[in-house]
Figure: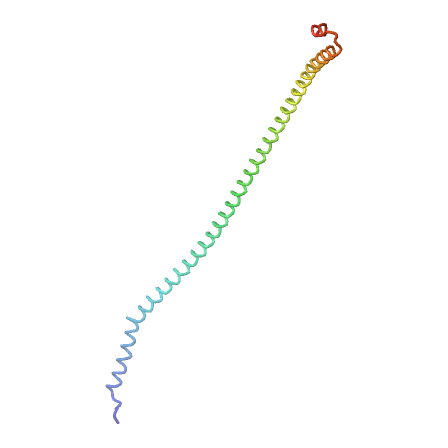
Length: 149
């Protein structure tokens, strides 16, 4: 046989097992603990970052809604201001129209009065001219009528 079972082989096997055991105690277990701690640390950081991301997303949505509401409110305020300005403008125009209509009516009354005065003056002159024409046609002289007015 090529391989003989002797004490050297048993001693070599036992020393190998003791070496593996000691290697496990001194090297593999501490390295495994360090790897486990780093893994837990990474998972903790990942979960914390995930929570921060969710919180940031929630805040972003909240701020976006607030900005949207503020814009709508601003548009409403602007529209209300425009409506009030138009209403004020229309009221001023109506007041001006009323004032202008009053002035127009007064001017028309004044024109009518002046027209009546002018018609009376013209009527007097027409009567005078009629008398003059009549006197000239009839030949009565017309001296007495000219001096009477």
